[in-house]
Image (cartoon, rainbow over all chains, first blue to last red; front, side):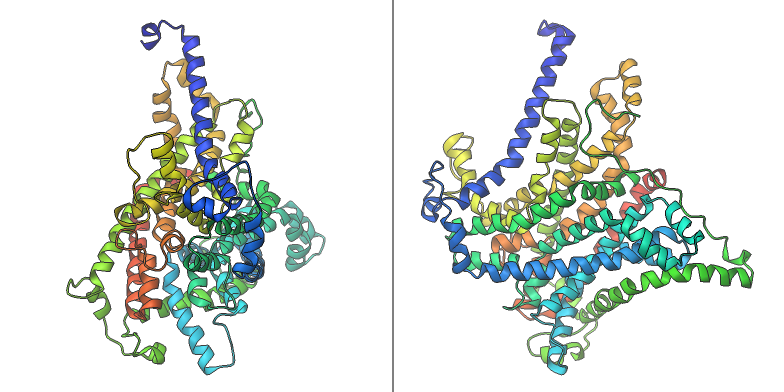
Length: 289
Length: 337
């Protein structure tokens, strides 16, 4: 009816609708990208200009990128984040590779009970074990020589445990998609089950391992709850460093934005290395249901 | 077979390899056969053992201890006793629901805010993700690059997103008010975002912005895995765009929507980073979420008993949500499996 109302042929109308939808798509894209551009702009303006709104977009400065290292100890936070998240993600991936393989290839009632528990852990609020872990760390500090509170090792332990369940599911879906013929051939050739797992399955699952590592790393990189409670000075990571920064230098928005840019860079690198497998791993579970 | 005329960015997942054969039911097994099953599965348990032991030590045992702490009078005075603090039964839980207790009001505020936050963020990310996925599923100039760029907010870490939006939300110098008031005159005066009533939206909007690409990715993968013949047949029968969405696309995406709902609600309910980065440990009565409340009561005020009690309630609430979800989406699970 609107075709006659606007005296348009159906074909013309379809073309117009299509153009409108494409415009809308690009408009949405602008909204999704604008804040990211503003992050970059903000990191390249003097803080005085940012606080009174007199931006000069044509004269960017990289001052904030050098000032942030001395003003707050950003290098210390960055180092902690890289070590804690890197090691925790590697450990979680290792645990997940073996457990995920078992869940993908073997079926029994206790195994499905275990598999159910693994998903069940996702229902537990982090605070539920954060409080006892904190109390436990304090207890260990008082009564034993084991130092876990405010140490990198303590944070690595916590993150490994926290991100292992998701990693197991991730690995399991990769192993499910891996054909069984190769391992079966290896078993026929006299390889032990463990030998087949280490020499045949693991190398073939390398993209899955990488994607799982990156996925766990990205999650750990963004973790603030545990690090805010379980560290004080030694093992603080970037998110808590940024929070301290906001608390202490409220007006230094240029450096805050610069710190934001710098802490996004490792994530970007990790994401682009693993993008293909990461997206497939995430959506694979979805399409299967 | 062909999914679209141009090469899709996101490949639909590989079909499931056939599941390994189920062992026959236990009662049908002879003793030897059972031993055989155990030998076959023993290797599986060796593979699981490291993860299992580790999760028990740093995950499951602390969780049980956490529930236990909820029944303890663990505050500044009893803190040195740690897990040996006096057992007071349900007193912490009763305190939360007793309007005379100083902790009551904060608990009610945080519960209400968490409900608002979770419902708006989940509706926004799933509804928005679906809309954008439908837009991206058309063929248009630059679709490949647009599909990839649309994921950008999701790559930015949440703590950076919170910092960035706090910067943008500022009343006078913030870019959002500048755009809304100075540049486009959508509003006549600049609203305050970082104080008072609007603080909840100050955390909701960035959360939707950052959370939208993930469901979008799921839905787009689902849309591309959909056989195009269904739509073509319906089109030939004269079904309009809305009818085709309502009767073909939506029912086929239902399992995906279910999964996104399930995890979206859990993830949003446990949100901590957004309010904590933007407002610190006390986001105020309009933006305080349950997670920030728990952490503040436990670590700022040393009220560990209350913190653990709220965590336990939160966990029970999530259990109830999963049960409810299961009732609503049970059929879709069967279809998907």
